[in-house]
Length: 177
Ligand SMILES: [Zn+2]
Ligand SMILES: [Zn+2]
Image 1 (cartoon, protein in one colour):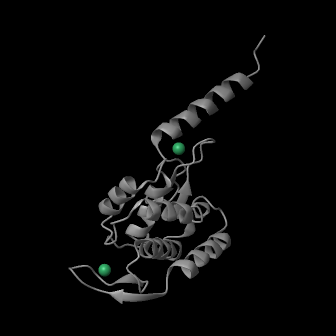
Image 2 (cartoon, rainbow, N blue to C red; image 1 turned 60 degrees about the vertical axis):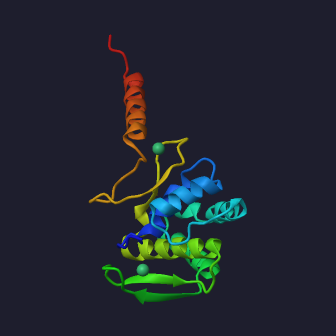
């Protein structure tokens, strides 16, 4: 787990999970491992359960209203987390643990994601949970840029929009003479 004011692994895991086309068990296991989640032994049914739960997470990204984000994240917390503890171990500074009282990976992963997103909204600001501004692209991201003004998922999307805007300006020029 990584810990920071973006909510650590839970937040970045949420964005990565939302960006895969098909969230099957092997893909979920790979992403849980790369985000250093303790719960990573999931079967197909558990992957499907996480996938449908994540559809309630998706609207949080790119939502312009912080009030709406707070409502959404509180709903996720109420459904996923039973309690929160501060812990310090393995050379990490104090950080939050989301206690579920169960070994069920679906419950533990949902709790880690809901908790991480709550920390991100409070610590970094809801605008850091972004969605690509290119029409037709639904990729979500955590905006870790210094100025927090990221608008696109990638330079590829940014370039496509800029080229299109450039062409549109060119067409609107009234021919002289
Ligand atoms: Zn810990
Ligand atoms: Zn994009």
